Image 1 (cartoon, rainbow, N blue to C red):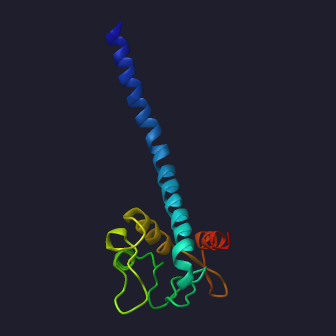
Image 2: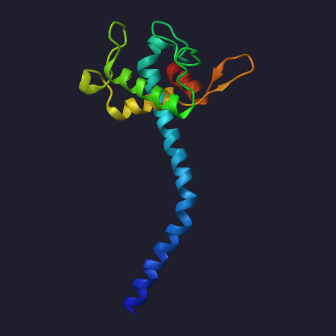
Image 3: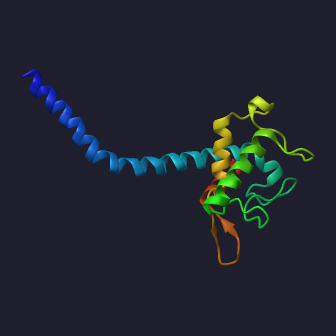
Amino acid sequence: MMVALMFLFVGGCAAYTAIELPVRAPSQADWTRDQSLERGALLFANNCRTCHGNLGQGGVGPQLLNNPDTQFQDQDPLKLAANRELLNRTLSCGRAGTLMPAWLNTNGGSLNAIQIQHLVDFISSPVEVSEDGEATSEWWHEAENFAHN
């Protein structure tokens, strides 16, 4: 009886994995990405908007959204990898000769490595360009909502 129950248990676990995993994995990946972008929007609203503007339009700091010079939202894999590395290094270490401070806590800043990653995910997330040429994203609007609250 114990052997039969063990085979039933192992078979049930295998069937569950074979059936459920392909269904849940994509939705879990989407949920994780959305959580990272939401946290990045909140971090941007709390730490970055004073210099870069509520919608990344620039100010004291350079424009982050729809900037033709940097194009952080370009989703070409090679450009995206280079932009993400530039953003990660800039946020972690700051920029010499500018007002951009180091934000990584081991470099004297106030954010940990996971928070830096959320910001990189947020800034480099894809955006839609409207008919009038304005770049927009639900996450940038979320950052603006966080900024107003």
